[in-house]
Every structure is written in C-alpha cells, then in structure tokens.
Image 1 (cartoon, each protein chain N blue to C red):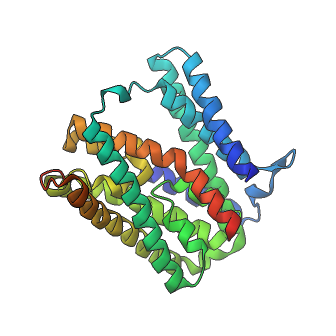
Image 2 (cartoon, rainbow over the protein chains, first blue to last red):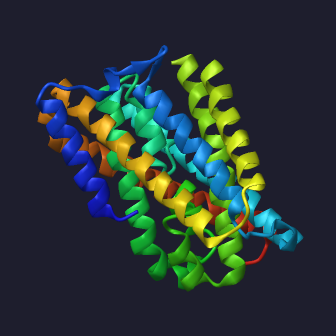
Length: 198
Length: 95
C-alpha cells in the first residue's frame, strides 16, 4: 500500500468525523464496524498466506535460529520501549501503541476502541516504523542485514518485504517473511491479552 | 478474550479458504486488492472516530509522541537483536 493512499484515507475519515459522523458507532448484530473490518482483514491475511508460494521446509536450522532471535528481539524492543513510554506518558495504552510492531491498521483499530488519542498515536507511530524500515534498510543492510529486519516488525512479510529481499538477498528475504508472519500471527493474541489487564 | 478467539478463528478460516482456492495470479490479485480495501476502510473508520472526538486538535503532540515511540521501539529492537545474535550465534558476520 502506498503512503498517500493511507494519508488520503485518514484525511477522508477525519473530515467525516469532523462533519459529525463517527463510523465506528455503526454496528451489525452487536459487532461494531471496527470489529467486522478487523475480522475481515485477518480472514484475508489467512487466505493470502495460504496462497503464497513460500516454502518453509527450505529453511535451514540456522535460519530458524535467526528467526527466533529476531522475533524475540522485536517483542523485547517493543516491550522495553513501551515501558519507557509508559514511564514518560503515564498511560498504559502507550505500551500497546509500541507493541504494534508496524501493523498500524490492526493496532490503531484495536486501541481506538479504548482510547481515541492512543489509537491515533498507534496509527502514526506504526506508519512511521514502516517508513523507517523502507528508508533505512538499504543503508543498514551492509552491516546489519539480519538485525535491521526488526525495524519492520509485522510489515516484513508484506510492505517492506520487497525492499528487504532486493537488498538483503534470498536467504534474508525468507527470514524476513517468516519473522513478519510470526509477528502477525502472535500480535493479536498478545495485544488482546494485555488489553484485558489494562 | 472471546475477541482473541474470534480473530484467530478468522485467520484459521482464511487459511483454509486459501487452501481450497486454486493458486492463481487472479486469486492473489483479488485477495490483495480486497485486503487493501479492508485496510483503507479501517483507516477511514479510525479517522472518523479521531475526527469526531476532537483529539486532532492535539495534532502536534500526537505526532511528537508517535515519533518518539517509533524511534524508541525500532532502535531498541535493533540493539537487542545485535546483542542476541552476537551472543547466541557467535557469528559477527551474520548481524
């Protein structure tokens, strides 16, 4: 997805909101618009994964080790950043915003149900993280071609994947895809569990 | 917690639908464009909630906090991964 498309969608949404229409208030049989769209999005991600040509059997033992380390690092980095953000901003929703790992559509839509302010922060922060990955990976690739994958978080399986695969090579691309996939599959569980405690 | 199960169920059901569907360029194109539509719709809904709440008046503060969060989480993730890769794989050429 292109950034201008996201920006235009956001501006259209804000204008609709300023005109007095809060689209999230529309509901069908007890489910809000956000719930329905999130379920549709995850359903489509499931279909997309099944249709993809990635063969995980070709992963070596070393690659599995790298993927595990990268996933742990992404979550640890986000959790530590969340801890610092909670300390500075005095709000536990800051932790959820940092844990978004670049998946702005899911994190913002989930967080906006609890706090509109932090939902907006989550949206912009995670878009910035995605942009950072696309812009910085080509530069960081020479010295940190594997660890720089962590900037992308969940986006390494979709939007930032082409950049990583063209600059990092085939092996790194497979690691990046698996990393993004694991984050995408585990993030909803982690975020919903944490939100039930806040 | 029920919501988590609903989301996981959506992922799993989607995966099985994808397995039933025949792999073709058309199917992938349709799925990609529908995903794009769902993301755009989600952003419009989030934006409308944002606009209706009046939070956008604090725009600069939101951008500042977002930048801080994005910078902090990316930097820490890289630092931790470098430390872990160096310690656990003992290969300085694979960072």
